[in-house]
Image (cartoon, rainbow, N blue to C red; front, side, top):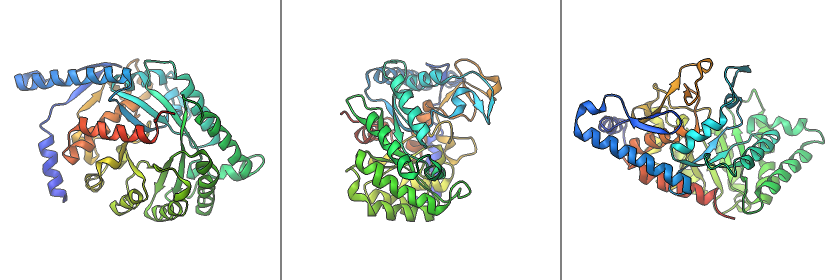
Length: 376
């Protein structure tokens, strides 16, 4: 649709009710809704019933949302911001909030060998915690960190072998805690961290020496149109080494033409707040097939801000403090994205597409489970 049609859809959606999540688990009507009469009271009751049903479904592993990308190892969830401690660690509360918001499964992203070990440990620690979502992680090296291959003791091939060992040990058995290879790919927007030729060399080595032997789907990073072109070429070259469901291009904010080329190769498109910033972003999202979309937060990054084009579609909010040093038990921190905020991502995508949010939730969650959280 053209942008003025999108604006019309946004105006229509703005009349729908909002809801506020108070504390870690309780959903209540937004302030002032009762003043509008019985219809909004009924909407509030419907919201509460839907929230309760989502919570029940999450406890049973049914019908819940799947966050296919969250950086739960980030220091912010330990209370550290820019290397300064601002509050106590609160990752358990963050995970409880996610479960209460209907998020049943979260993929914990790793971008280095050290983080791969950390993701495995975190996911195993969550196996018997019924108040948290199910967690499973990734193994791989982020494009901006590919220099760790060359600097690793024993050299690049030894480093790749160490990554493979982590993946093989954690991906086996019936309670797998490694379900994807990544975060890997190409980032030409931040070449100051890692040169283009180094990124290309070690992305291809991860395809050959990590993704192929593990048989796991990819969790891909792609920044800039030029990077998309190179990424597509390498993925096409190695497509026969990848599984039938080969993976997802996460945090996609690029051109529609590139998204459709990734889809043609079998890949899915991951969307988060960074995918929904501009009217042009929303126009791309509107034209993507629903059965190729996956939802993510990229927490603690990519929150949906009031200045973003998609913000008007947001209906769910949480109690929050304005600054990290004002942290309070049971409240979010402003601009620190959490897995619970996946519901906002869902609302924006459904709203801009003119679709029912629960139908879209079911479609995207089924796709995520089929690719990543499958049994066995």
